[in-house]
Length: 175
Image (tube, rainbow, N blue to C red; front, side, top):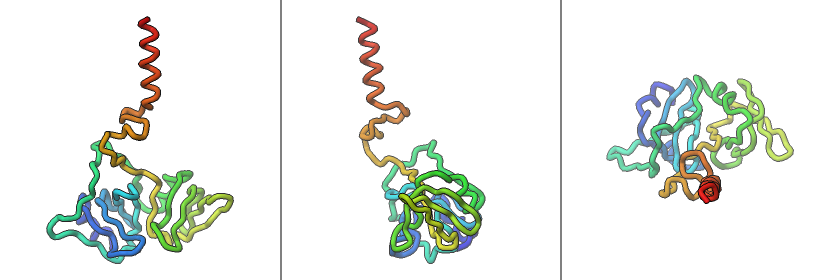
């Protein structure tokens, strides 16, 4: 799939590939020269290289649902091409490819037009750029119905435990 073919799916929910470990359902957020950005429920933001896409499925009756609410201020990394995207997420924990023998997780250490290197435990693994089908770096939308309170935060960036301490401090100050 090329950029022009993928542009028609921006803002739509699609299935990438028909099956297998790389197949995902998600909302196309943006399309760039050699990759597109797909927001999925399970993996969060996944960056797919367009030259590895075998098929795209769109429901003719709009039956595919993402099942998550996307915040208005939702931000994700973006760059004009795949190599520059990887450069922008260097030193992040990433997952290359979704499954199978070529799936790998680690810290993205170095990137050039031919190779991406990951630190995986005590090893440095160099991954050929032409064999990277997709990558994600852990950006996931919280799907809890209680607005994020289950993770110790309530959406304003302040830990709920800190708020309890602040409240206790105010109570002590009032005494």
